[in-house]
Amino acid sequence: MNAGMDPTVSLVRSPRDDTRIEKPIIEVKDKIALFQEPKVSIFAQAKYLGQYSNCYLILEKDSELWILDQHAFHERILFEEYSIEYAKNSIVKQNLLTPLIVSSTAKISAIASEHKDKIAELGFEIEILTNSNIALHTYPAFLSIQKIIPTAEELLQKILENEFVDKTQFYHLFYSTLACHNAVRAGDPLNAELVQ
Image (cartoon, rainbow, N blue to C red; front, side, top):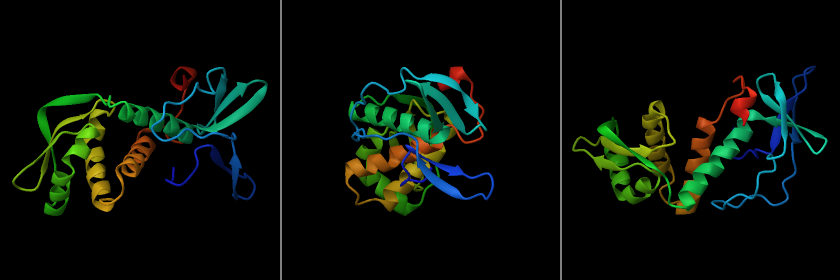
């Protein structure tokens, strides 16, 4: 999903002429504020009916049929979970028995050293090595093992690109990107158990 795209809007393709039409899926009167505990999910009483084309979730709520883009929907859920963990200072860190090494440049290592506290708040405890590489000693527990190094590399790149962005905006940017990368994809088959 693009960073500026609203997850409550789905792009629908017309099967006849392949045109793209933006259609609101649901109207959100009060969007959840960044890093604020969400209210009770509007989907708590929704009945899952199935999946269409491995891209859309079909739900029924209050006699209404809802069609949701599964990637955008899951991305929003993950973003809220990550944001809440951050807001509560409760990001669970997983220690590594052996540090993972991230290849880096002198410039990125210098910036990482300056922002060590910011990086630690996101769950990564780092050590700058003499060859400018970076050793990871902890990582956020919600990451799968195979995503640790790519996520750390992306985090370092985002710090480099957004060095002067305010802290809250930076975390918003990082968590929205992380949520996008960890969300189910269009084409992923899902069953009712996974959707719950």
